[in-house]
Length: 84
Image (tube, rainbow, N blue to C red; front, top):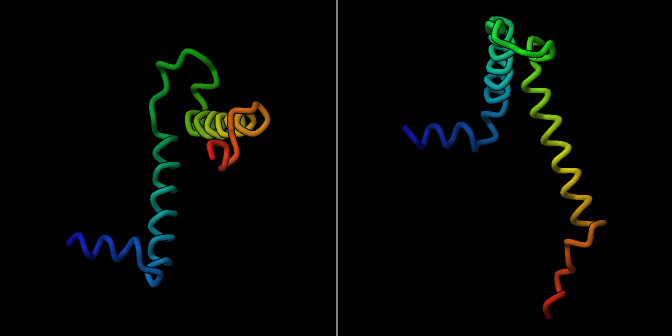
């Protein structure tokens, strides 16, 4: 059983099936997001479908850019041979 799962996700010949499964799952999640009850939302943007996903994605991208900036320009990152 586990071998079939590993082969499905690791083998290149199943790429088309994986892509179809991914798109079907993504479509089901988007459709389900429109069916969620949002009466308990405090702010107007919390009532918009897809807001939590957009907010999470934007926060993740911002976190990556800030950490890259601090590492490269902020002087936190050192050369590989710094301690040699």
